[in-house]
Image (cartoon, rainbow, N blue to C red):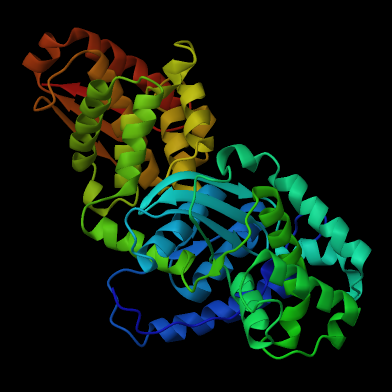
Length: 461
């Protein structure tokens, strides 16, 4: 992999969130402007794969549904909102690609505008990942209002950061890693200030970071920090980042770290490369999830095959839900780990809220709705059924689950499907005689679709 161009436009969206987690119109306008600029850059290249990921601000903003379409229109591609844990995994993948040491046990720290990720792994393998809801913007605004700096405020900011990380000592305990890397732009900015101005020993040691804190306190205000190595508008953000970093290092007993120019963007590229080589982390996540909740993998695989066959008859080649249907089909029975009664409801909640490596929150939301709608009434997903492509995927899963329970062979040659404004199911007479229980449930299926104003007919002949 060779990086041919990078571009950056630090709009700092987290600063635009109010106390009710509503993103301001100004912040939205800045984001749209920046994304239009990136769209112009992308036009310069002949691209086959583009991935756009959004992190903490998109995760927490309550008005995300309002500004997401504006952002997607500005960039010209779908935007994937990834979980904090997935953000951490992609960050680690970027670092592991850059630091190609197969046996190195490493801790990676990434401090963003709205969240901080800690990741522990060995070589390319990730062992632990955790996302904490503490970032540079809120930290700076809370403890250094108006850009004022004093020792008491710094102590309070560091203590608050330590409190966020105190539970992390069990997962990221000292002694299990031999190297520590900081991957975020804020950490790299701190490292550059320390190196350029020879603060402390000139490296990213805990002592040097404390020396930088002393310099900032002596300045008393961000406007009086005039040392080279950082743009003036970034000093305020650095305050929050430095206090978080000091808190994390103190709590995890880190004495020295290295700032590295690799992280989320490189990790997203690495993930695209893996998918193109058929090493999709999402398939591994599904297999791991089935194993964790002791779901029957053979039944899951069989349901997926049946659903795929039925979906092909409904135009799966042009469906945006083809992969979601496959994943949901394999996960449709995980709710039985909680209770057989209402397993589809339990499963939907599990799929929506689980930490599934490689999946976006949008992916999991679609899969959750498909799992919820696999049986029973359809009123609970009536809004989603307005999307004909989703309705076709849901029909395929419902029929596949029905046939799997009836122990049908994976090759369904006796049933034909059509779905446009109505659902038409054609069944061969001899097939209907061989599978009377399926015919019983197909009759019951008419009632379910009738409740959402979709006609379903079954013709035997």
